Amino acid sequence: MEDDLVTVASYSLFTDADMARIDLEAEGISCRLENENTVVANIAYANAVGGIRIRVRREDEQRARAIVERSARISEKPSFCPECDAGDIELIETRLLFGLLRGHPKRRCRRCGYTWERVGL
Ligand SMILES: [Zn+2]
Image 1 (cartoon, rainbow, N blue to C red):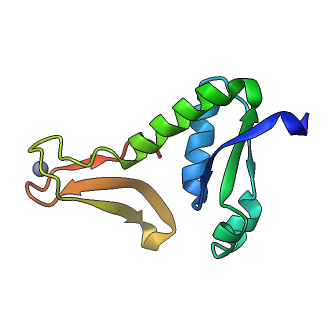
Image 2 (cartoon, rainbow, N blue to C red):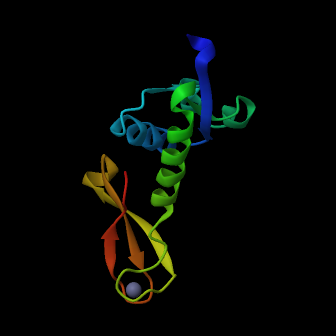
């Protein structure tokens, strides 16, 4: 059945691909990642192999495309502060225990200092 799989998205970062996979599976669409080991092993290969590809069954293609597009938008949003609507946002990562454990990435408004957790991962 390999021939019935179609690529709906490709990513150079494993976390992005994995987030899309989680969203697809949450919607009941089974998918597989291609090239993930190659890309994770060496990011320089990402372009050479066309990134980490997400492949789904042909009959799921339309729905899957809508889901990965939505998922990509969510991962970039919010780009405006929910408190003061400023667009000057920085991404910060909380690090605990000398960087051994990483907390959730957060966003912080440079204008009012409001901090909130990133939607998604
Ligand atoms: Zn703000």
